[in-house]
Structure formats: structure tokens, C-alpha cells
Image (cartoon, rainbow, N blue to C red; front, top):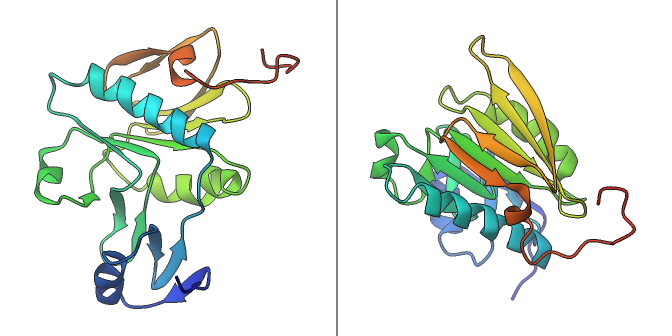
Length: 194
């Protein structure tokens, strides 16, 4: 396999055709194509646990849960990201197999290399979605989950949860035990977070 630079430039049309032939995922920001960093086993397990809990809870509803390989469209033909988990309950998202444009819930599992970007630029971009009601950040190295909920005034309010807590996701009316998100994850027993 030929190594590609971390960042490439191309048009949206070129990106759509090119990315469909790639093994790795690439985000698209105003003509710049950025390769996605690989994730750890812990990162993958937490993403899988979260998506499974949500998928089971939403099985009898018209909401859809996607993990890793479905893009969210921030701005048509300009900005596309791959969240770790995304939920849409909007009928308008039924028409495209690779894309969500009306998410109600986005979850990012944090890593050292992406945490600042997920907290900063990505959250700033995700807030452009009128349908987005919650943005969730999940720590990998410690059992901590941060939920940003949009209130009635349109302001984002932070709620923090630890290992013994249960979080309530208002956007999909689902309650989750934090311990279920960290199933099969081992933490340092001397950690201040346990």
C-alpha cells in the first residue's frame, strides 16, 4: 500500500469518488481531506458498547444508530465528519445510505490525539445542526462521560457522569448505566477516578 500524506486537497466530487475506494476513512473540510487516526481497542470497545446499548434501547422506535463509517454532513459539499456514534430520528435521513444530515445525538470517544479537536472545532461545527440536542464525550483512560445538552434557550449545558452513575439522554429518552459503556474495559485500580 502506498503511504498518503495526512492531508490532501480535492474537490467535493473528487472526494466522494476517491473515498469510496479507500480502506481508511477521511473527513472533508472545505477541500482538504484529512485521514482519520486509528483507534485503540479500548476506544473501539467503548464505541461498540455505546452503540449497542442505544441500538437495543431504540429498537422499537424510528431512530437509527450508526457507528464509525457513516458521515455527518455539516455543510453540503464542504464539511463532513465521522463521529464515533451518531443517532438520527429524522425521516429526512432515510434517503442516503452513507450520510446523516439531521442528527439528534452525536458521541465522540476521546483519544489523546483527537480530544482537543473533538472538544473544540468539532463541537463548534456540530452545534450548527438545528436537530442536535446532545453531544457526548467519553473518556477512554478513566470512567468519565460528559454530556452537553441543548436547553430550551438554545444554550449548551454540561452534565458529568462517573462509573457508578446513570446518565439520561434526553434526545432519545434513554437512561444508561455508565458501567455498561465501559464493559470489558480495565482501568488502573489506583486511579483517582475509581
